[in-house]
Length: 251
Image (cartoon, rainbow, N blue to C red; front, side, top):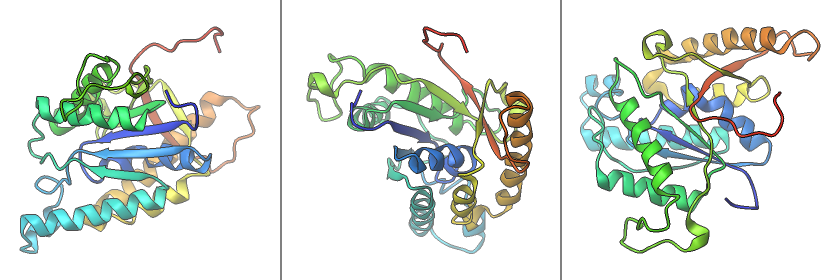
């Protein structure tokens, strides 16, 4: 792992996913002076751009629109973003795609990884992204696994074992999502809202994810207890930790 600054890596299936589901965590990280990088696997050009198709726009134009929206949203959160342009509906898992993600891991050296849940009956792209994110995380640790260009990594290019958190899917009850981490994003929420408003192609999501942040904020306060002094207007995001926490103290 890098000794310089903590780095959050977000593996997002589509251009908007990282905003709705993890925008608060991203903004909170960058507000602390940390680095945040979004690996956007597709633009959501086929399955999440209905308004553009209904206006008669073509595929390349829609990709350009969604790319510009995602770049603006990432900027609002203080994050870097890169696009793998793997296509959506379906997002196809492949050795090439995983190899490109390995390159991202080794270049970014994440200390924390956020991605989708492994189950989503409404959108197969999301678990496909999660599976590739998890596979690439393991392979990026192995010095004997080549980079996408066929070269082998130097010792300082392999990664450690960053914890992985699944962010909340749109319909959590149907996706086996039981959060065990509640994140206070109160101070970061204005940036998340600004990022949401960079995505007019999915304007119907703005109110939904604002309301969800309010509900999760109530749970943040409830689980934190009365002595933490959280403000009444606490906003939150929910996550599931995928791998065991390693610690010398239980708290």
